[in-house]
Length: 406
Image (tube, rainbow, N blue to C red; front, top):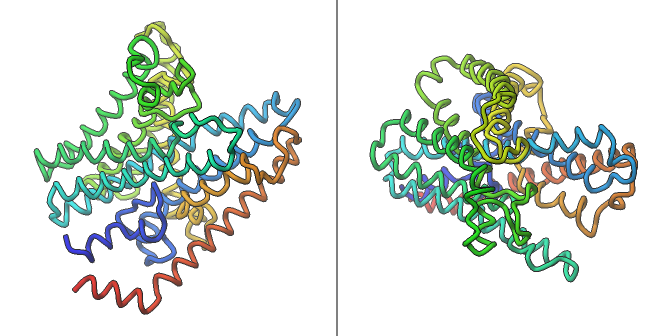
């Protein structure tokens, strides 16, 4: 693969260092033609939805105080906060499949595909470590040094991408043309991670490992027991592998022949998974010595996968036939710069420059703060996109890209 091809495949990386802007090497939606917008904008829309859900969860958690923290409103806002991380990881898997399949079709050597994708995952993991360092320095000297080693969602996205790269390398080395084998391997890996999670959080805990390493398995941190607010590989990486399977399925000849019906099938499958999960949760059969529905249960994992598939269907319909095609879409815009708005909004919600006093506000006041955060991050996202668009079309940059291709 020459310099020009690799630059095209990872153009999203040069536009914005997104953990999830892996959309088949394509630039943000604003810079592509209309047919490509209708085909792939649902990915950005879902990522933007994850950003909005993340904003409301963080804002209400940081700013609500007194009785407002005991309200039903607060409970539902935090329940909505269970979706952003699965969405980001799930979309990382779909986007990873798009890029891997594109490289495979270009006859790029399997070893080169592995190096390219695993390196990208390592870069995201490094960004996660850098983010933790930034947070520690901003909170210094009050933050404990152990915060530097906290397993956050960026860390897990990076590791998941590296693991997906290894899986694809193994499968493609065995059979380069079998997309079906990739689907089943990714699906079985995701389900295996979910099924092992309850054991690895309880009776099979790798407590013999140093806590910084064990934390990547079960989120124990330095607190002696697994912590639900962290993002260890078990169970979180499972969402990426399910997304990888879904991504390869969407690229299959059979799914392409069905066009929009494929997404209807995904939506119906999602509803069936939700009801199946609820049925299994109420079953008298228990496979695990300790059953924790909200944190480790495979039943809750299946329910969230069902929700993700239902959202995938809704996002596709909205972006292909609904208001997503009417013009400017705030969610698509936020989705194109998800890493940037994630990185910045944290400081204005939880950091020293929080725009409201922490744990001291009513629901209306916190909602006003949420609106300000949303508009500010949207403006930042638009500014970033325009700035990059101007820079991308500078003559000297164009000349440099042309020279690299020669």
